[in-house]
Length: 80
Image (cartoon, rainbow, N blue to C red):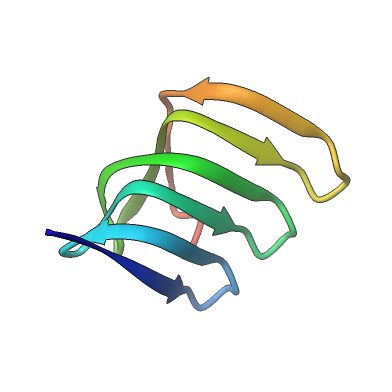
């Protein structure tokens, strides 16, 4: 079952969106501590060890540059 949740990591990175158990899964917004933001799809990845932006989404850098993209790359250790 999926539900909406808000998660905050030690470095200030936050996630608001759908989760399933201990996984980011579905649509959400990931705000990095450096001011970057990704809004879009996430695949089934563990909250504690790895996050995956996967599918369509919008990545906005802290300087305002925007990238509309289909992301199929996994990002890890963003919360360290």
